[in-house]
Image (cartoon, rainbow, N blue to C red; front, side, top):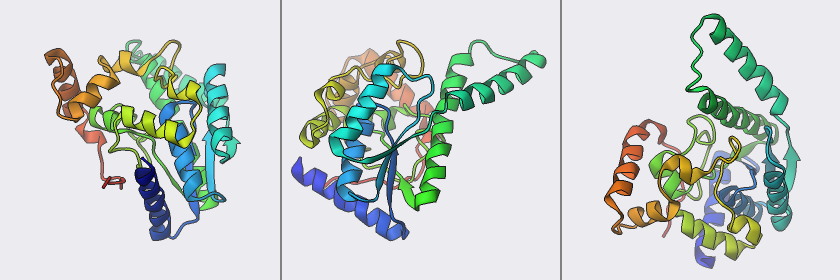
Length: 246
C-alpha cells in the first residue's frame, strides 16, 4: 500500500507539472473517497492543495465528517454554501417547466440531485482557475464501471487517481493514510436526499461489484445489474487521465 500511495502521489505531481499549473483541488463531502483524495493531494502538494466543502442542505453528520477528513490530513480548506444557489436555480427551472405543463414529478428528485453535482463542479473549476490548480476526481473502480456519478458533475474533473482501485481497496488505503475510522466505516452515501445510500441506488453492493471487477463469481442477478449499468452509462466514461497502477 505504501508503494501504491507513493506512486499515486508522484503521478499527481507529474500531472500538475505537465499541465504547467500550481497544485490540486478536490471537493470534500465527508465520504470515504474524497477523504482519501484529500490525503493524497496534501501529500503531493502540502502547500498547494485545497479541499472544498460545498454544502447543499447537507446533513450535519456529513459536514462533521468533511471537517474530520480535512483536519486529519491538514489540507487547506474552503467552504462555499450552495444551498441558496441551488434553491434559486432549480426553482426557476421547475417553475418554467410547470408553466409549460411539462414538469416531470417522476424525475424531480434525480434532476435536483444532478444539479447539485453540477453546481459543485462549476464551483470547483472557478476556484481552480483562481489558484491555477487541477480539479481532482474521487471516483473509484466500482463507481466508474457502473457509471455511478453525474456526467459533468462529480464526473467533470481533470484527473482521476482512484479509478483503478475497488471500494474495498480505497477503504484499505484510507486506513493506511490515517482517515478517521468513522469515515472509513460509514455507509456510503452521496447525501443527495434524506436516507439516500449508494448501494440502494445501485441495486447491489460495493463488495459484489468489487468481486465482479476482480473476475470472481457473483450471483446472476447482481451480474445482470452491474453489466446493464455499465452498458447504459458508456457515454459517461470519457477520456479523463487516470492513474494506472503498477
